Image (cartoon, rainbow, N blue to C red; front, side):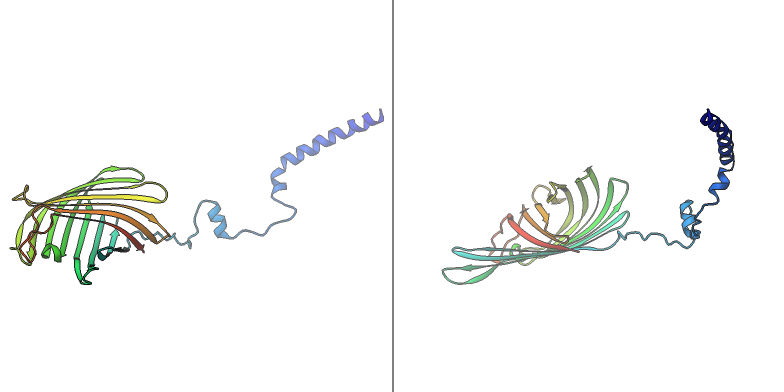
Length: 290
């Protein structure tokens, strides 16, 4: 009974104390036993959702800078005739929000040595270059202007110059795949060494395809048809390229490709004989991008 009496006496005191604590909870919380130093004003503003007035905006990544690629390929064969071919290419491109610029120069040189006579002669000497500007008209269609130049000693071409204006479209685009088509019209002039010079209005259609095969390898393919608009069936040229590429490091890459060129009306050589209509080659190249 004494215990019950003691408990009954303490119970009202407990409830009164609890009510007082609940009523003055805010006061208790505002007076911590161990007060903390005040936080800096900038931190308090950031916690409230307001950036401090002195905060600097994050620096945006500059996407509109020039990007370069340098490629070198070497081919050597043996047997009755020993050959050595060198293929080099320099490419530069720049991409803005709605505009793109591409410039590349390529050179091919080769020589052959007859093992029976020991005589060495040059059998390849070709240089090409292209400059192209693209401007987006909408999300999938763009306009372009391009200038192409070519010199080929063994095709009797002293200098070929072409200029085109046209439109292109992204026919199919997915995360790792892009298919594009272009059509353009322009004018071309060819200065031959032994054949009568030519100049005419020209048309060109082209198609390009690129896709990521897997984490290591990417595949690209390109085809173009250029024709004299006055003699479409008799004077035309085609170019086909296919290449697989893998990155060795962040900047270094390796590629294996096939190239086929066809000319329906080739020029004549120094002896007055028409040169071959088609040329093709397989090549492995080492490239560096920066």
